[in-house]
Length: 379
Image 1 (cartoon, rainbow, N blue to C red):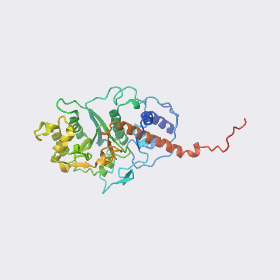
Image 2 (tube, helix red, strand yellow):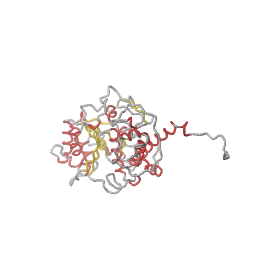
Image 3 (cartoon, rainbow, N blue to C red):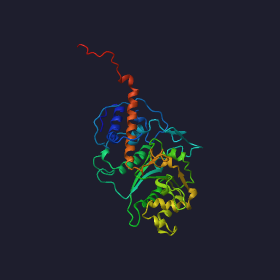
Image 4 (cartoon, helix red, strand yellow):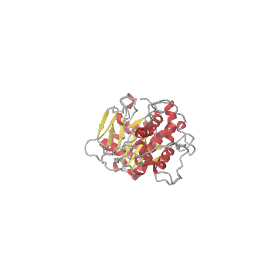
């Protein structure tokens, strides 16, 4: 517990710096592998995406320890993350977003004008429990520099979900004996979907590139209306990324699935595809790459075409240095999987240090003293 006589801003910022221990340790990673090119009591438990920012924050120097989550302080992790990642309160209906000199505009009337909160679930799905040392579900001391790359990706998903008030689940699924483990995706999503309006799946080497942009804005931007069952990004233009009819595949590393009868039927058809009761020849993709992705692209999508929203590769696939697929909103680091850890660490550190540097500039009249003459006074 913090002393009750501490001023509110000090109490809040003590909590901030203890909770974001992982961001400070990310500095070590950023040093070794550089990437290429308020008072928080005014925050509510739900993100206030368009609220003004109080300018009376203060920064203090503290010793960092493993965060104590047993305290009764009213400041939540969501408020802390909003403070760090979303200082300008990016709106669900923000007219546009600019990245790398390109403006991405909303068109038409926004479909989602209020936060969906727990109607959205961000989900990780894996057959591995991730409970070993240096993995995300390990209960021991946390050292960012030692954590494995896939755990870092999962942490980024949990961070994004908490930041925007969504639900988060990690489905530790049973493995298959007759097919690749990646085939667990359809059944795991179908298991969750009845409890949510949207289930959003990301591979562990994929991450939201613009953490401050809420999913509702992306739903508006990509126009995920009621007649969409699933949205996936297209793959890059490469010979291995085409189906048997020479149509570009979609990538199952990032999926937005909307709860409706068509989505449930599609997931069932997809899961049962290798059984060949509906799709003769689908068993070909039990083991060979790209497993469930190739099965969906070669068979399932042709029965549900109008219900599938294909997203631009440049916006929801690839990574910043890839060229045609830069992952503007969602990056998928299948090319260099270590980068999911590096980019998330750099983005988190940039967000936090941006707030600290802004505080220094805000207080420059107070903290900067000009020494006109370099002498030591007597006495």
